[in-house]
Picture 1 (tube, rainbow, N blue to C red):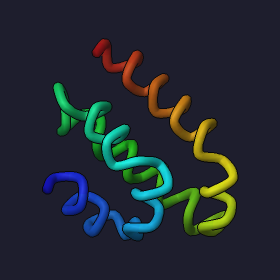
Picture 2: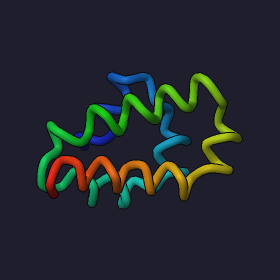
Picture 3: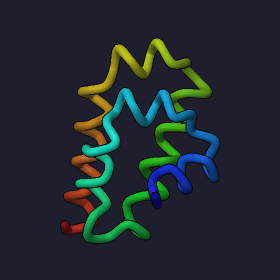
Picture 4: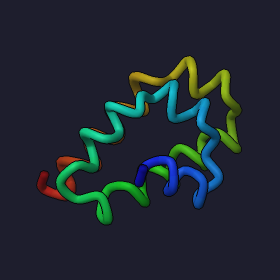
Length: 76
């Protein structure tokens, strides 16, 4: 599982992946995992460390929208 491996490498807890949605992240990185996965995991870790799990829980939709912007930036 590439997502779990990347999350572990970046220090992103499984709970954060569950909140954002593993399927959502998988769809995001399906075509270009090496391009999209690092910024996604970096963002998740940064927000988790800075704001905590409850903040992530309350901001799932804005975070997902942020990742969609990343996807468009990479031309996927």
